[in-house]
Image (tube, rainbow, N blue to C red):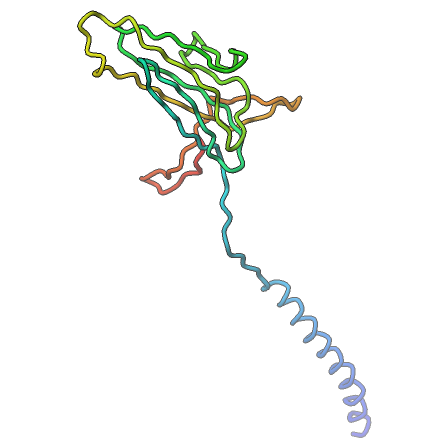
Length: 183
């Protein structure tokens, strides 16, 4: 019997040590697999530019200017002018060089040439209304100006380009509640 008791003592010490090592290792492994981190807070992300149109009318001429109201994003801008077929409208670029606004016959837009920096305004584009038929009430005409902007994109060479095909929206799809603001 004495021999059996000494074997128990001989095996008890390594078994206890092995049990302690297993217990310490198990808690470390358990912590590794159950640890997580959560984050909170928010940051405003400006996806595109924001612009405002300014239109003043004097002497049958609309003076059109666009201001980039975005705090950080530069953009390209363009305008389109709609008017009755009874009128004739003559456009004049009022910049010093006279070549900042360019008309495109393909789509009917007037494009502002340089990049419009955040907070900056375009030079004036005048739309002078003329050719009104006799007896036409000068106070009842309507000339509508539509303006659009797109953020500056850069090509492989680092040159600024405009991508007028991208549509930025600030709404979500009403049916699914999903949307990322870019189409």
